[in-house]
Structure formats: C-alpha cells, structure tokens
Length: 293
Length: 293
Image (cartoon, rainbow over all chains, first blue to last red):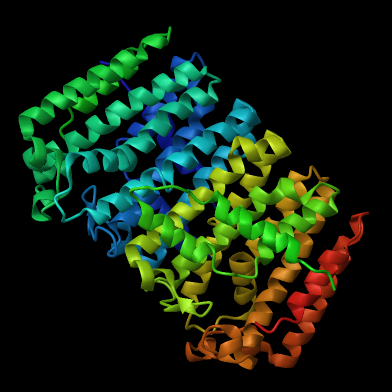
C-alpha cells in the first residue's frame, strides 16, 4: 500500500503558508479561516492533484498551489454548508463548526475570503512561473467552472430543492456528480493541466475523478448507516432522520457496495492511457472504497 | 460631460451573456443570480475598467470580461451583505433583497456561485486570447487579492467588529479603503493590466481608484444624511440609527464635502502619466463627487 504521508505533510505545510501571516486589523477573519482549513481533514483532493501531476512525469511540487486551492474551495463549501440557513450543523469533524466559534457573519465572510484566496494563490507569479501562464489560466478556469453554478454550488442547490422529496436515483446521481464529483474531477484534471498533459490524459483524469467521486458519495451513504458516531465524527443516521433519498435507501446496502466496487474498477481502468507508474492512484482508489470514516 | 451610455449598454449585454443559459436542474440558482446581477446598478466599477483600458490605447472590448467580473464580485458582496446574519437588509436598490425573494440558503449559494463565475469568465480561452494568458493571470490575481482577506472581505470584517463602537477615523479609513476602495482600485488597475500598461500607469490607476473609492464612501455617508429615501432607494439615516461612526458624524458635513473635492482633485492629477485623452475619467470622477444617489 502506498504511503501518502510525505504528500500530506507537504500539503499541510503549504496550506498554512498560504494564509496571510502577521498582524492585521481583520485577525478574527484569518483565525476563522485557519480554524477550518487546518482541521486535519483527509486532504484527498489535493493529494489527487499532486499524484496526477507526478503521473504526467512532473515534480508534484509544481502543482502545490493548485492542490491547496482545491482544498480551500472544499473548505469554504463546508463552512457555508454548516451555516444555520443551510444544513445547520453544529459540528464538523468532531469540532464545533466555524459559525459556532466565530459567529455566522464571520463564518460567511471566512468562506467568501477562502474562495478568493484559492484563486489568488493559483494565479500568483510564484505559481504561474512554475507551470506557465497558459496552464495557470487553464487550471484556475477548470476549478472555477467545476466549483460554480453548474458544478459544486449547483449540486448543493439540487440537494436543497430535493431534501425531503424522496428524490429519484437520476436526481441523486446528478446532484452527487456536481456536489461531490465536480471538485474531485477538478482536482484530478488540474494535476494533469499544470503538468502540460495531453487532452487524452486530462480526459482520463476526469473519468477517474468522476468515478471515485460517485463512489466516495455512495460510501458516505453506506457509512451513515453502518459506522459508529465516533469513527465518523458526526451523528450516524442523520440522512435517515431527514427522510432524504440516499443510495442506500434507494438501492440497499449490498447493491451500493457492488456499485462502489464497479466504479473503483472503472476509475482504475481509466488510468491505462498513462505510461508512468499508476500504483499510487490505484491504491488511493481502493483505500477510498474501503474507508471507515 | 462624457456620455457613458454606450459603455453601459455593452456592460449590460455582456453581463447577461455570461450567465448560464438554457434549462438546468439548478434553474433557481441561475434566476437568483440574474435577479441581483441585472438590477440596473450604476455599473461604475466595470465602466472604470473599460475606460482605463481605452486610456491605455486599447479597444475597451478586450476588457469586457474583466469589467463584468468586477461587477460580479461587487454583486456577490451585496447579496451576502444583505443576509440576516450580516446587515439584515430587506431592500436593495428599492427591490426586495435576494434572500427575501429566494431564501437565505439560495442567496448564500448565489453569492458563492457569482464569485466563481467572475473568475471563470476572466480565465476562459475567449477572454485570455484577447489579452494574453500572462495578462489574464495578472488581472484575475489582482481581483482575487483585492476582493479577499486583506481587501473587500477584510474591510467587511473591520466594519462588523466596529459597528457600534464609535470607531476612530483611522479605522474608518482603513475599513473603507478595503471595503469599498479595494474593488474600485481593482477595476482601474485591471483595465490597465489587460491593455499591457506599464507599472507606472498601473500605479497611477491604483491612485485614481483609491482616491475616488474613499470619495465615493464619504459621499455615501453625506447622502445618508442629506438625500431623500426615494432618491437613495434605501432608508435615509440608517447609519445614525446604528450609532455607527461615519465621516459625517466624525468630521461634519462641510469638512466631508471639502475632503470629497480634495480626493477628486488628487484622482484627476494621478491621470497625468497617461498621454491619451483623460476627459472621460475626469468627468466620471466629478460626476461621482456630485451624485445624488
């Protein structure tokens, strides 16, 4: 099994580095951003960016700004998702959610500023010089497209509009492809883009990301039923309480496990177009399919 | 007096064009974005971008994506600013605010998606081909920096933290330089950047933007005391009700009018480094200093 510790340490160091340092009048805002960003998440998305960059035979370090930008977009979406006017969650990863600590106003602004910071770091001279201005533009454009109206945010809106309506599987699939899948696709594609990969390789990364994105979401639904609250870091069974359609409620646990296996296989097959060693991304796909939290 | 109608029509058409068109599951989100974006605002910020681009001897059309991006950032900030957890304003420009029409959840997401859209349009192939990838990166970086933690959002946090504390003039100045001034500076600088201007010209645009930004905010405070509710499109005297420091409460109306005149003169003087015709930007600075809403 691949060991991702070195990459994860790189990501942690870089994330902390990209936050404004020093003394500012708006220190509360920076503290609030740091609170949610440096929370010990799994860092799956930035890891994907680094691994795809290496798979295209470039040093993972050149993709670091882009990897961290994806994690910042993910973090901002979690901060806003937890707000009382959204999911109204008091806890995130076993800790009080951002607005419980800093208030709703600062939490809203913290998410807003985190989104800007993601674009700021990708487009900085330091980042663009490593990957060329063309690739910097293309990568940041990809992230913007996948995180916006017809991507992540669109998926959240579909989620809100079908919350207690027993949505059919097609809607659930579209929602997850956007809400979860889009950002994971962006992470994979961006790793290839900054490495100057071919369109065929970028498409393969998108295919891999799309498959593990849906598998990831199905696993979330399975874990919501089978995991313990302690392992999950949030209340188990919260989906059922809401009368919300899930893959498990629509298909049953066994069929869901089969789907996760199929999607994981599809993801791994997509890697065939790359001529470098795919072990790390194969291992990562398997580990996500077998995760317990 | 310069007539800005042609530019304003270009901006209106482009803004509407950049919104997703067609039928989508997330139509409510798109409707909500359109509701706030196509609201008949003054479009001062995008106008500045176009005028500075022309001042650098390039066709204003090449700056259109960047001009509209600034307006989108401005619009998202207004949507979030009006939320109950922020300023809790039920009206904006005489119409119900976004969350009163679409709900707080959609309004929050609508602002989020609008920010992504701003970056998406600036970094699209269509935009970047007109101005070069280098300039596209630099312009989008400038906007990201000015709208984030140490710019617009930072200014909003300073505002929140000093709301009922009778803030001294230094804090008021820092707040306004960030909350209002930063985005206006970005608008001016971006016009020069996409036109491939020199560092000296970009610095002059920043100086002009900084001066009219503060003048703009002081005028807001003056109008809050002197205008009629009808002309202003929001309740007059709302600052006083909150016990909030304003330029008028700290310096008095006469001193404020003097300051606006001084800042307007400084802004106009900054234009000396450009060798093209500055009439339009001179007229715009004067018209902002004399506005009645």
